[in-house]
Amino acid sequence: MTGAADKGRGMGLAGGQQQSADLFSYERAARVRDGVLLVAGVDEAGRGPLAGPVVAAAVILPADGFSLPVRDSKALREGVREELAVALRADARVRYAVSVKSAARIDEINILRATHEAMREAARALQPSPELVLVDGLRVPDFPFPAQFVIKGDALSASIAAASIIAKTHRDQLMLEYDREYPEYGFARHKGYGTAEHLAALAARGPCPIHRRTFAPVAQILRPPAEQLSLSFSAACPGPSADGYTR
Image (cartoon, rainbow, N blue to C red; front, side):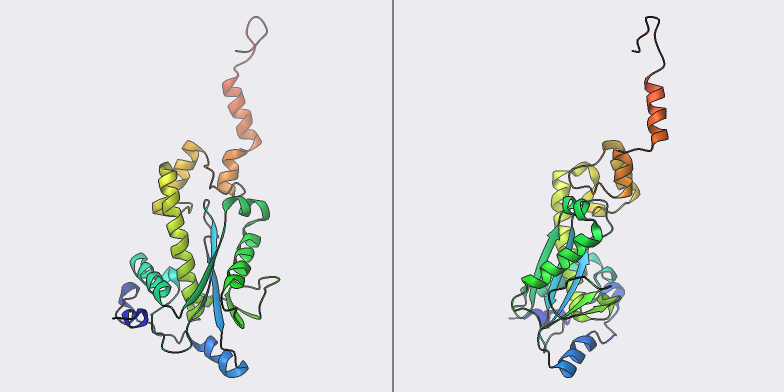
């Protein structure tokens, strides 16, 4: 029987490229420098879209014998990304957790705080708990474990890259489900990002329950500028009639 790690040796990367960078340097340094055994990576997917949740994932990879060619999910073709996600989930040595923050929560506390909340929750949900967490991007306040924040970490750390793959594929699956619920918006194709197709559907139909109402293109439809309201009112109300009432 072929294991998930062995299966990954034959898995092609985007454009036929091979994994050239040493993506385990951060994990190895932590183990050598601090004697840390359980190193996790954390990343998010979905900060930019106009609709749908933001998703964070936390992943602990095995210290030895791991050969799946993980890398930044954005650098992978969709099919390869999906294959890697399946292989990661199938490997019993890989520990992972996911946290999802809805559009309503994003509107309530803003996208940055919702992303940080999801990152903290994903890390807390890991079993066993990590001794060190490598987090993609800038500092996350009140992080629950010792952490190292790595700019562009999904291209520099295998653990963060694995988290980016889990987060992205989990969110994509959610958007496919939303596409079945709200087929008129095309979520299966653009995943909630502000494409021309999405903006046209938004303008024609208005937002649906999973749109982020605090994001500018959505907010402008819900609360058009005063001059636009004035023009609309003037067009709808041509003036008083002979009996002094408008019709």
